[in-house]
Image (cartoon, rainbow, N blue to C red; front, side, top):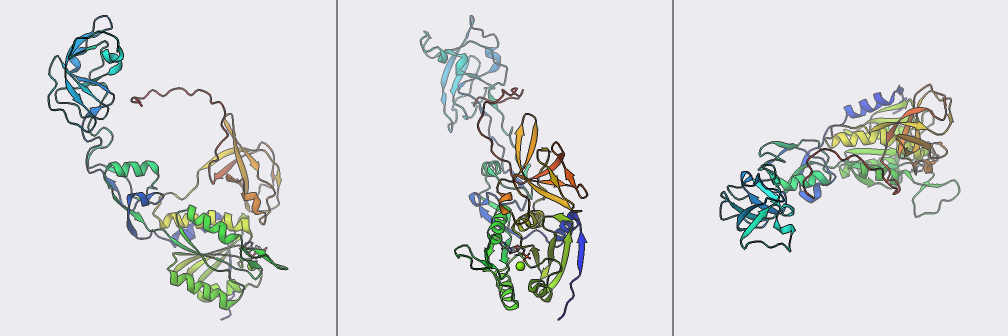
Length: 439
Ligand code: AMP
Ligand code: MG
C-alpha cells in the first residue's frame, strides 16, 4: 500500500486534546492497602465509623468535670479525689462525679461524667516534691470547659466521603485509608506501556557503539518517565528501520496487552522513514508538526485499537514529548482529574535568541531567592543535548514569536519536580493561630 502521509500542523494544546480524546480510564482492580501507594483511587471512599471513634484525652492528665475546677488558681488549688487510672486502650469502669478525677493517658476514652482534661502540668504531678494528701490531686489552674478533649468524629464523621475517585494515594491518603479500615483499596489498573526505540544506528547500553552507531537513551528515559507517571513500562528490543522488525515488535507489544505504544525515532517530517510506513500500514495514524521546540514531529494514532504515540528520536525531544503528550494520557488512563503540571512565574537569568516561530520549552534549574524564583539555563538547549535535562527542575515556556529572551524576563515555568534546597538558617515563621494539640 502506498500511503501518502498527510502532515497536520497543531498547537501543543490541540495535540494534547486529540490524544486525550482517544484514551479513557482503565478498569479498576483491588489491591491490599500498602500496594495502593502511588496509585489512584477508583471509587469514592467513605468512613465506616467516626474518627476518633470515641471522645478521648488529648493530653496526659486528669479527666474531670470542668465546672469543678473553674476556681482553681496557683494559690487556691482545687483538690479532687482520684478514682483510678485509664490508659490508652483501657475503658474507665467508674464515672467521674463532682469532686472526683480520673487519671488519664493521651488517647484513653473519657470516662462518663467527665468533660475536661487537666494536663499533668497544672496539677500536683508537675510538683513531685510537694506534699499532697493520699488519694487526692490538686488542680492549680482552671482549664476552659472541654479543654484537652478530642470529640468523637472530630476528624472524620461516619458515613461521610473522605477521599474521592481520582485521588492520588500518597502517605497521608494511606494513613487516612488505614484509619477508616480500607484494607483493600479499589485503584485504577496501571497502564501498560510498550516502549520501542527505532533506528539502524542504535545499540543497547551494554554494547560499545561501532562506526555510525550510538547508544539507545530514549527507552530508558521514557521508561522512567512512564514509571513516574504511574505506568508499567515494557522495554522492547530496539527495532532497526526494517518493516519486519518493526512489525514483530508491534505484535509483541499487542500480545503483551499494551495500553499505550510509545515509540521514538523515525517520525521526522520529510524523510523517508520505514517507521511511518509501517505505522500507516498497521493503523490509523496522523503525523503532526506540533508548534513546539524541541519535538516538532509527533505521530499519533491507533494500532489495533491501541493508542500509539510516536515521539521524535532526539533524546530531549523524546523526553519533552513524553512529558507533554505521554504523561497526560497515562494520568487520564489512571482516572486522575488533573493532567497539568504546576506552573510558576520565574525570572530568567540567561539570554536566548531563537528565530523559531514555535513555542519553546527551555530546560531550567529553579532557584528560590528571597521571594522570587530564578530560572537558570541548564546548558546548551539543542534537542540532542540530553544533559540539558539533567538539572532541569522545569520547562520554561517561551511563547511563539518571542525571538529574544533577555535576563530579567518573567516567564512561566512548568515544574517537573521541586528541588530540595541546601540547609540554611530559616527565618522564623509566624506561628499560625490554630489549635495544634500537644505533640
Ligand atoms: P529520528 O527521529 O529517528 O530522525 O532521530 C533523530 C535523532 O535522534 C538522530 O540523531 C538519532 O540518532 C537520535 N536517536 C533516535 N533514537 C534514539 C534513541 N533511542 N536514543 C538516542 N538517540 C536517538
Ligand atoms: Mg531514526
